[in-house]
Amino acid sequence: MSVSDMMNAPATAARDAEARAGEAGRDERSVTSAVVTIAQPAQELYDFWRDFPNLVRVMENIDKIEASDRNRSTWTVRAPGGRTVQWESVVTEDEPGRLIAWQSVEGSEIRNSGRIEFHDVPGRGTVVRAVIAYDPPGGMLAQLAAKLFQREPALQARRDLRRFKQFMETGEISTSARTRAEATDLPTAA
Amino acid sequence: MRALTWHGKHDVRIDTVDDPEIINPRDAIIKITSTAICGSDLHLYDGFIPTMKSGDILGHEFMGEVVETGPGSTLQKGQRVVVPFVIACGSCYFCSKHQYSCCDNSNPADNQDISEFGYGNRMSGLFGYSHMTGGYAGGQAEYVRVPYSDVGPIIIPDGIDDDKVLFLSDILPTGWMAAENADIEPGDTVAVWGCGPVGLFAIQSAMLMGANRIIAIDHFPHRLELAAKFGAETINFNDVKVYDALMEMTGGIGPDAVIDSVGLEAHGLFVDNVVDQIKVSTFLGTDRIHALRQVILACRKGGRVSVPAVYGGFVDKFPMGAFMEKGLTMKTGQTHVQHYTPALLNAIIEDKIDTTFLISHRLPLENAPDGYKLFHDHQNETTKIVLKPGMEKIQVDMPA
Image (cartoon, rainbow over all chains, first blue to last red; front, side):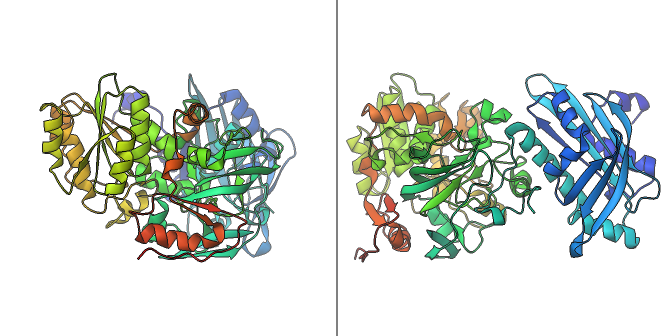
C-alpha cells in the first residue's frame, strides 16, 4: 500500500490500533480499539469524557478517578483480592469537541495510554473511536494488568464504549438484574 | 414472590424468589394480572435455546398494574399497562426510526457480544428469553421489573378486560406487522402459511388492510376452522398439494402476497439454536423448511413475501433462483411492538379486532408447569393459555 493510499483510506479504529502498535513497538495484543456511533452531539460526548471523574459511571472496575487539575488525574482501579492499583494519567493531546489523548506518567505501576476521537456525522450523531494501549503481556506487571482488566482488554473496551453510549443516549446503564444486590454489571454497583 | 422458573429440559417449577426492585431511574415494577405462555416458550421448555440458566424466570406476554416507579418513569401507580416483549430505550437511532426490536441499548453491554458475533449486530433485549437477549426476568410471576418504562408499556383505560388487550404484548402486533410487511393492495389475494396465533392475527389484519381474498394453509382442522371464521378460504396440506391448490384458486397466477408464519424449530448447529430465540408462534409439526420453499415457489411474479416466523441460523436449499428470477421482495424481522400498540389498542376498543377467541385455557400461575405440559403435549386443543397470579392451585387433568 502506497503512502497516498494510506492517506486516502478511511480512518478506522482498527488501523489506528495497528499504527499505534507499530509506533510503540508493542505486541498487538496490548493495543485495542473500538468504535461506536452515539446519537448525541460530539461536543456533549467530549465534555463528558474530558471531565475524567465522570468515567467511573460507565467503566467497570474503576474505584475512583480524581482530577488534580484539568490535565492530570489519578485512577484507582479495583484488583483481585480486594486490593487496588493506582496510576496518574496526563493529557497529551486535546482538541475540544474532537479528540483527547492521555498517557500514564513516567514510573507508573501500570503503563498505559489512550486516545478517543469524536466525529460528527449528520443525522446519526457522533462516531466515537477509542484506542487503548497498555504494557505488553509477559512478566509480573502484565499479569497484573490482565487481572486488573479481569477480561480480554478488547472485550472490556468494547463493553465500556457500549456503556458510554447507553449512558449518553438513555441516561442509564442497561441491566437485567432483578434486584439492586444482583446489579453487579452496573459500574456504580458497590 | 412466586414465579415460574426454568431448570432444564421439561423442568419448569413454581418457586418463591426475591421480589424485583427499581434499579434504574426509568424502571417501573408491575404487579402481573395476566400472563400467557407463548409458542416460543416451548423452545425454552424443550431445551433448544442456549444461554439459559437454572432459575431464569420465563414469560414475555404479560400485563398488570403499576405498583412502583423510578424518578424517570412516566407511569403512575395504579395504572394498568400491557408491556411489549421487546425492551427498547426509545433514544437510540433505531428507536427514533421506530425499529424497536433493533434497539442498540436495551441488551446489557456484557450480553451484546453473543448477537454481535452471531448476526454481525447486537439486537435488543427481550423479557424472559435467555441471556443472549439480555437475561431479563420474564412476566410469568407475581411482579416484574420493567426497564425503560416510559417507552414500552401502553396504558389501558378502565373497563377493558385483560383478555381483550393482553396480546398487544406480542402476537397481535406480530400478526399485524406480518400483514403490513406483505404490502397489501386492494384486490390482492394473500396466502398465509400457518394458522397459529400469529397467522390468525395476520389474517384478521390483512382483511382490515383491504385484501380481497385470503387463503389459509395448515393441517390442524381446529385452526383452519378459526381461519375460516375470519373469512379465509382454507387449504389442509394433508389433503391436497398446496402449490397445485393455490394455482387452481388463483387462475395460475399465484397469490400476490405470501406470509410464512410457520418458522423453523431450532436444531443441529449451535448457531441455529442460538438464533431460534424468539417467536415461533405456530406449530406445524414437520417439514418447516419446506414451508418457506413453498411460499417462494407459490408467490406470483413480482409478489411480496412476509416472514414473521423465526429463522435462526442458516437455511438449507433456499430457492434463491426462484426468488431472484421472479423479482420477489421479502420483509421480515422481530416485531417493533411499540410502534403498533397505540393503533391496535384503538382497533380493539372500536371492536375492529378480537383477540379473545384464541384463549383456550385460563389457569392459576401456580399451575404454570401443568400449563407448559398441556401446551406441549396437546397442541390441537390448546391454542392459548393465560395464567393468573394470586389464584389457588387447582387440579389440572390432561386430555386423553
